[in-house]
Image (cartoon, rainbow, N blue to C red):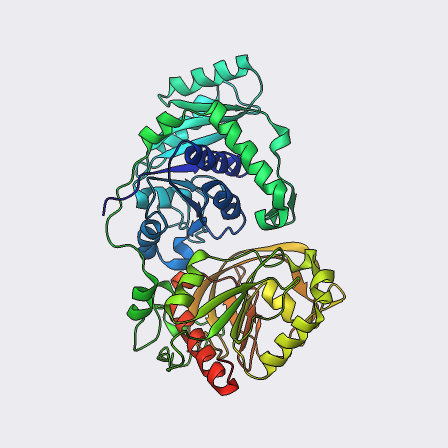
Length: 498
C-alpha cells in the first residue's frame, strides 16, 4: 500500500496558532475535494475534536510515549486509509516532547520532530508574527538546521499586522530560502473560548464550535496557498496498517503484555520491590454471538477518548454503546462500563440530577460489573464533586483544585483489576485540575516516581473497578482491553443480562 502523503503543522512554541491553522487547513482541503486524515501529536483530546469537525471523520493521535514508537506508523496508516492527504498538528514547539532528565535523547520522545521523521513528512512552521521583523531569518535558520532528520518545507506567517509587516517578514524568509505558504492577518474573532485545560471541547461548544471551524476554514482558504501545500505533502512510511484484531491476537500469551507496557525490569518498581508475576490475558469465554454490552460515557462531560478504544473493544467481542450521563439511562444489558476523561466539574449539578443513572451504576459496580474510569470517570465515581452527589462507588470526595497536574507517568499496577495485574507497567498521562480531598479507602491502582523521586500512589482499585487520574492509550495496551471484555462477558453471563 502506498502511504498517504502528509504535512506536519509545527511551531516554535505553544500559542503560535497551530490549532487554528491545522483545523482551517483540514477544512479548506476538504472543501477543495480532498479526503483528509486529521492527526494530533501527543495525548491531546481537545484539538482532535475540532479536526474531526473539519474533516468529517475522527481526529486521531500519534503518541509514541503512550503507544510505543513501533505503533506510530501502523496507526498513521490505519487512520489515513481511504484518504489522499493527511494533516498532522504538532504539540508545543517543534522539538518539545517528554523531558529527558539525563538529556541523552537526540530528539525528544513524543515531539513533533520525532513524528515528522517517522512519517517522512515535511514540516510547515507556523510563526506568530507579532513582534517579529528581520530577525525572523535567524529564528528560521535555527529551526531549519537544528535537526537534519526533518525537512522544513515552508513557513506560514500568523497574526500579521499590516501589508508592510508581511513584506518585511517575507524578505526574512527568503533570506534563509524558505517559501512562505501563506500569511494570516490578526483575527481576534476566531478565538475559541477556553478554560483551565485549554480549548472548550467541540462537543461542549456545539454550534459555536461549528461556526469557529467554518471561520478557520474560510481564513485558510483566503490566505494560504493550498496547491503549494498539496504539492509539498509527502510521506515515506512502510509496513502494515494497525489492526485491532491483530493487536489482540499478538498479545504475548506468557506475560499478557505488549509494546511499551512490558520490557521494564520489576527491579525498578516505584515501591522498590519486585512486582508480582503478570497474568496472561484470559481468553474470551463463550456468550451470545453479539457479545457483551460495554457502555462508554460521552456527551459534554466525558469528551476525552481515543477512536482506537472503541475499535479494540469491538474487535475483542464487545457491543459498544455510547450514552450521555447528563440525560441518559444506563444502556440496556450493560455488562461493562467505560467512564473516560472530560470536564465533569463543569457539569456537576446536571450529573447529580440524573439520580437513576447514579444509582444504577453504583448497584452494578457493587454487584461486580467491571468499570474502567479515567480522570473524569474517577470523579464521577466519588461520593461528591464540588459538593454535588456522585455515584459513591469510590469512598472519597473531589473538588476543583488550585493547580494543574500535567505530565507523562511511568506507572506500575499495585492492585489486581479487570484491566491490570500487580507488577504490570504502563505509560500514562495526567491532565487535570481537580483533586481528591482525601485518599480513597480502596487500595491504590498505581504507583510511580515523581521527578523529585517521591513515590506517588494514586487511584483506586476494588472489586472489579479500576479508577484513576491516569489516562492510558488502549492501542498501547491491547491486553488490558481484552481482559476488560472478558470480565464483561463473565458478568453478563452471571447476571443474565444478555
